[in-house]
Image (cartoon, rainbow over all chains, first blue to last red; front, side, top):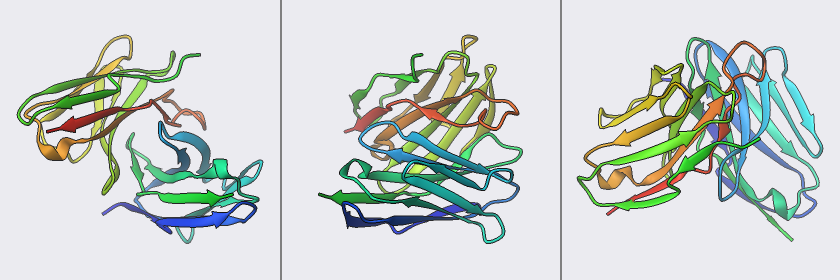
Length: 111
Length: 116
């Protein structure tokens, strides 16, 4: 059965810390992996990783995809209280138009 | 440009009733997907529409249905509501196509349904 597993489920850090969020997946015919940030509203898009784009960076956030080991990580450096949110990982696969989401990692950044 | 708009934002129903939720995608986006989000299960795929056709359906009972109109707006309906249907229902739109970003989902704020 296709699945996406995120870890840890939650973590609490202090401002300035660096965090690494994990997303492992088992899907057939992998097409893409998306990262989203969800506060008390709609998930907002962060990165898309594919076979042709396995590393992305935007400011303090970066992500890599390991297609061989079937996982992705999202790194956040110099965390700020505004980074507090649930981070979602979603995997899409060829031949379908749906994404499988992990249950998310809840990050809390303390001042 | 305007984002994905979902209405209503909040609603309360009782068991046995039915509900219709509406989603207006970003202008130019032709694909609309629906997801159910609950604390225990996370986001679960319901269905996806493109050009008024349902292309994929998730593992939900037949009480959950949807449709898409010619202007890409979409509705989903849940009949004979059960307590377990209480959730945040998220709609997402995408361009759809072959470009690298064409299948990125842009979400609306959701419709929070409470079933009593």
